[in-house]
Length: 161
Image (cartoon, rainbow, N blue to C red; front, top):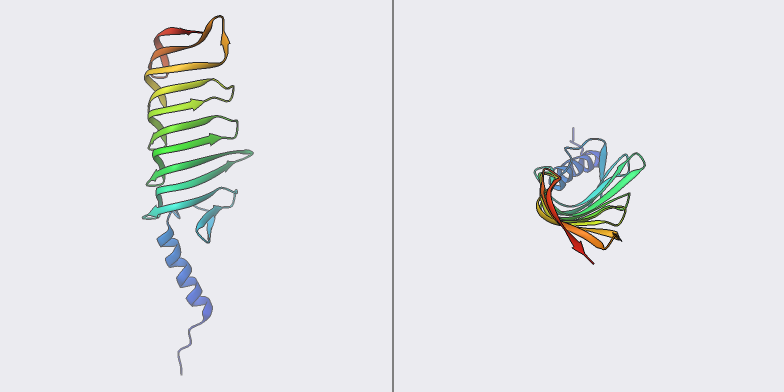
């Protein structure tokens, strides 16, 4: 009797190899469509991968209930790492350095109210010297320069207009 190879078996084998090669498939409830990995909630990732994780440069669009955000930049072992830009559904925008999914290093954030902070971050908290600029200046001041410790102001100097 001859051995037959069914087309579906070949296709399944190719898909399994493609999943391993493409990466980030440690995350559940999704599927690979071309070069884009898509989750059931509408989130998706496109970019480089290594050892089944997003690794290198890529784009991730996340959906959480009715909220969404977009990250473009570096990844390491499935987490934001290196330089990247992050935009949240509420209008908040961060442009800067990341480490292990946290703002870490130099970066600038524009808050949803239009205020802006530019300075140092440590594990997602403002840390060290940074400048905070108001969207709408207040009583002869356009903002302040401060020394931050654990996301709290230790001391500051107002920036006059």
